[in-house]
Image (cartoon, rainbow, N blue to C red):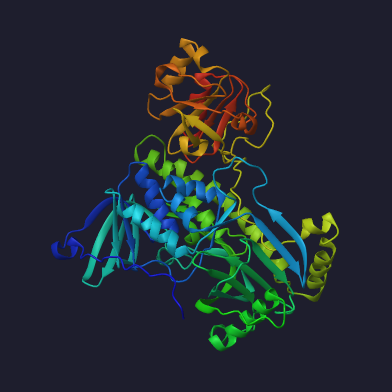
Length: 566
């Protein structure tokens, strides 16, 4: 098979503990250097925590695997220093099209409004993302990467987690205060601790083929139900970078996975698809080569809780969803984003361990939302009875001409960030404070173009990793001394809140408080802000609280609630 990517081989180093025989004692260990484990290590390091990252392999994932990274994930990756690389290398897209047999019946646009830094989706093979994240982690002195270090046992006693690690040179022991398990859907750590995942395994199989070819197909998501070139089944086509196209063929539960992966069985399927797309029967057969082939089965499952003492599960180790909707890696990155600041506050003694219960609470809520949508998508894509297939096909037949039919079409509801509106960390709006729009407590904050010190930028990149008080004013130069002093006071004390003044007018603010210029009023519109409105933003860029008037005591009370200190 053709290879468009040169897989890196990360250097294995003999751990010094093997020679010394001493137990390595560290405050924090992450196991698993996939996208989620690397993201967790970077997030924790940016919170000021040293990280030991262990992985049993010495390269990145083989094959495209995770392909689609949604806008929210890209905004998180910006904070880890790899967003630009992902967007520059990947294929940006916003439009998806769904076909029933030979006709288009539905399409969507992920970003219908302007003034967003990142596109709705970027397609990029997972190995590139891992390479970028690994390089970012390796460049940080507080992250120690140990490749070819396999965890073979885990024990938890009191506040200490003990790991036995196997290498080619022998075994050594690690004692840590906190263990982050990012070791994938089969999670050996979960098994070693006797923990389970519950949910549903769908009785169907799909073939993944990464196909290298020169094609002029637009950068869109195309999904077919019952196409002539693969009758009775479904097909998905995505464009990736390096002239690689990802094609998913539904096979049915009775298909033999090993037989299905053989080139003599894969190639005819691809030729049939390309022949249908190319149209004219007298057109020369399009040349292509296979790069990677795999077969997968749908799973929609999760653990009962994501934190168990001082062991915390993230990503596929905690929850698994079917791939349609691009909810796997995207939700895993949001796990890391949610966990980092909470663990930092607990380790620093600024918040009780109960704050980590909120990690499980919030990310289970998000996981359940993903599981519900993935289950519905899978049931629609792979109906298991004659009645459900008849209903599905009737919906598709109506969708071309009727809006209510289009609303029922489900070829994979795409990943969106969870609105944590029921979170115990939120402070409800005050009586009498009314807001329009979606920036409710618990919402992931919207982006907007801003200017700081004469340089264009984006609101998302001006906040994060710390609590932020975003204070909207009319004229920054008219702020009175008492308000400036009150804003400045938020940055003192145990849990600092960084103040940011934002207005449509340029000008400086006293007290060295950063000023963001909302020149086109986009931020004010998206946050339904009036002069005097203040938003408290969490370190993971979710709204914690909002007020129409600024009151220091209320802000500090909301911070206490958001950190389980109330």
